[in-house]
Image (cartoon, rainbow, N blue to C red; front, side, top):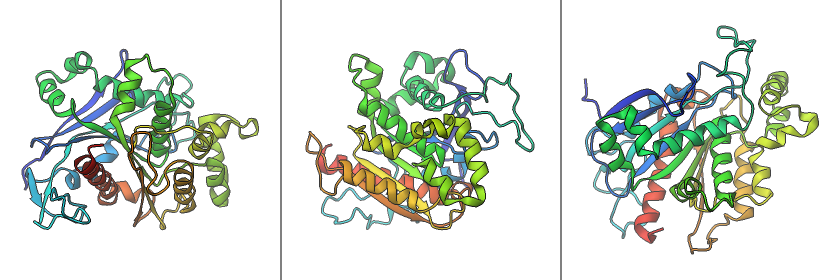
Length: 353
């Protein structure tokens, strides 16, 4: 049996008072990460309502992301070479450095699901009777809690000092699967668009989110429903539950493609990775095509630069497997995260941006 490569803290409340779903899991590498480092914030899917898909869905990916030593043998995942003469960032030494300081997997409150076959909710369940954008606000609260040394110290105790040292200079990569990707992009767009510059928490989070990863993501819920006639009633049920009736235009609240078209921008985000499998039975390939086109056409054209001369990247990664298989087996999800880390680290080393 191999030695553990990370330490986990589970079910940590990030609000006070917190419900049972306003918790997060914190996984910290036992080896000091190489500079520069990233903190991964993972947001699970589950149609905003499945109580059986939780923060624990990141667990199969952790062995692929935390190396067995501070420098480990190259795996199938992308590797990072600090030799700037390398043309593609590949590591010719056969070793992979760890640039992940911590992986944080966030739970959030759910919309009602009274017909769940094994875990139906009741109207009195405070964890499972919310609507959009409460999910986004929960994830934001979790990230703000992580940035608060006084609050997190109460839960992490002596480990807080080490966690603070690891993440104080660490950038954030937001990662979401399925509707978790919806939440991730909505949060990044909201922070990037915010004009509340007097709030330190807004500016701090805006500056730290440097990459967003959407895996099997839902970016247009109307298109999703229309592409899956066999699941039409199911998709309408959970989408109405999250946003309100389609007839009133409520579904557009979660349409991140529309948000981008309307001018919202992830102003500090330099890298986006979009991962999708053609074998996904629940989310169609055209979601990733529409999202990639929206990003590139609006302000992410290849070679385009933002106000600070920082070129932005949109990377599409084709995955293998069914919708839930992507996270259940771990490696495919980890591949997208590793790609985002690789590109973000290279950009920082090469351009200082």
